[in-house]
Length: 199
Image (cartoon, rainbow, N blue to C red; front, side, top):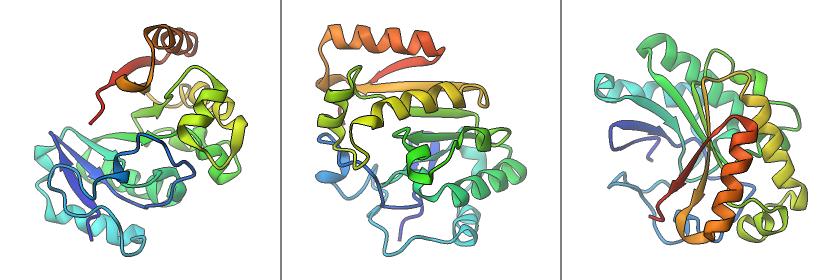
C-alpha cells in the first residue's frame, strides 16, 4: 500500500483514509492516486514504525518538504503524525508541512496547536469559504455548524507555534467577493492566503 508518494519536489505521507468531512470537491471522489503514486486507499492504517521504515526507500536529498497529506485527514492520527515528524526532523532535517482541514481539535477533543511546536514548520488549512453556513454545505463536516469557528480558532492558535500558516480555497468554488472576504480573515489571523487550482 502507498504510504509515501512524490508530488513535485516534495514527499507526501499518507497516514489514514479517515476524514470528518465529505467535501463536494474532494479529489478522492473521482481518483485513486496522485501523480502516479499508486492507490492511496490504504488496506489498513500503517504503524509509526512502518511509516518511518518507508523513508529508507527514498532519496531524501531530492525533497524540499515532507508533507502530511494523503487520502484522509492527517490529524485523525495526530500521535503518529507528530512521532513521524520528529523522526524526519532528526534524521533528515526536512521542512515539515501539514495539510489539514483544521478540525484536528474537534477530532482529538483538545487544543492540539501546542503539540506542533518544534516539529512542524508550515500548516496549510483548507478554509474553503468565509461563511460558516456555506462551509458546512461545502465540506459536510460531521461536526456541524461549529466546524468553521473551530477551524479559525485552530489557525489562530497554531500561528503561535509554527513558522507559517496558510489558509486555502479552491478557485472554482468561490466568487471574487468571497475570496476578498477570505483574504480579510487571513490578514486578521496573520496567515497567508492561497487560492489553489481545482485539480
